[in-house]
Image (cartoon, rainbow, N blue to C red; front, side, top):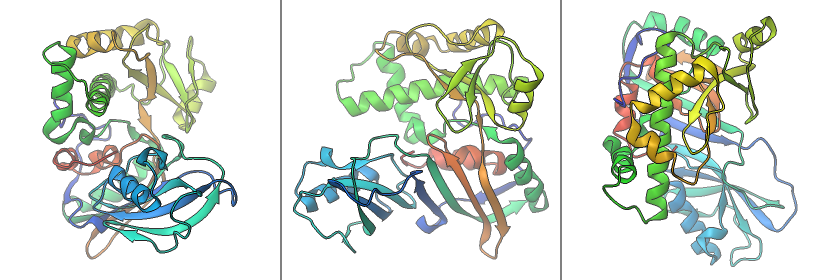
Length: 349
């Protein structure tokens, strides 16, 4: 799979531009979907970080509190080449009792509240993005209509190239490991490799559905996802109600996150997924032997609360995405070189 040559659903992107010229050009705010309890055995910290990755900040917070880094909770990883706001939890019974205004290398605590539970990975609704695209060139007059269409119809839910590592290194390592050429004993390396392998196969299936014009339309045999949730159900037969729910983005078709066991899809949908997977048999056959079950992911990404403005410095974009989604999937439809720029970064997701 060419990590950059993924088809766009809304035609050729009309413009080019520069991303992340400054960290402040890419602002991400975590959307937990809940407020602090106001009491409990943990501190829920809102931390603003700049040019620092999540694991680094977690270690620094643990050092200040004199606790093991594993006792520091966070819901998700955030971009390093950005300014981000995200939540961390730490036990109240630690060396640090007042977190107000605490700063460290690349981060500052901007809010501290009591909370009952440690944050677990994935315990967030999504992320809010505030982006500036500089040096915009091309058909800028077409940008407004395209963004309006993206807001109304969504975009293909591609995994961004940063999922595959710098220059695709994580995916290359996954191929060698699953193909039996090397061993991966480090837990983190294995995790990155598995994630890259599953993401690559998903993107391949999504590419085929975009080419067929069915990435945003349900078919008999599909597995549908209820928007904004992990809930899925099989589509044995289409009817007008399901078709309309899909049109308004209440439900979405899904693709496979490859693993052991049988596909949940059926009929022609399952046949397509098997055919695509066998084009990369090293990955699909290897993943089928790993202790990880088949899962599903929405093929379409709903872009909520989308707004834009042409400013003196460039194009300002604001939108909200559910957890696990990549802002580069949105930018890919707008900018001709969005994936190429993302592949050069070593960002977290």
